[in-house]
Amino acid sequence: MGNLAILLAELLHGLIALLQLLVLIQVVLSWMAVGLPLNPLTRLFHTVVEALYRPIRSVVPTTLGGVDFAPMIALGLLYLVDTTLVSAMLSSGYRWSR
Image (cartoon, rainbow, N blue to C red; front, side, top):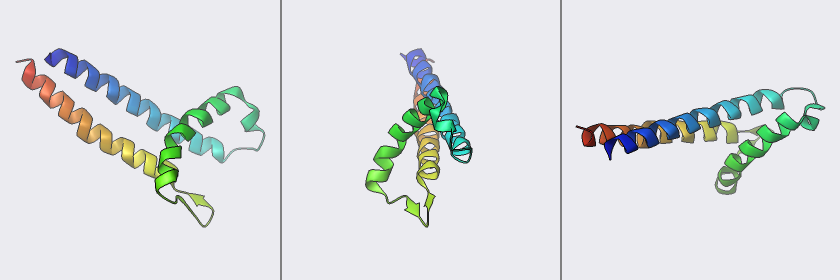
């Protein structure tokens, strides 16, 4: 049981790290040329990241003076989940595996 919790925690940590990387890539791509939305890879990043931003934007007004704060809020929430939930899963997994 403990090894399963550790495995799930590591998988969740990897998924969170991937989402954080996608948010950062999307932020950098948003500063690039206008023609980039035609790129299929750019559209994929946009689709995945917008699915993450949508719930945040429905709760919190994220645009202030033309600046979108949804990426910063998303990164903060992902960090919070990573440090609390993943570390709790890891610690309980290590306790169970003894």
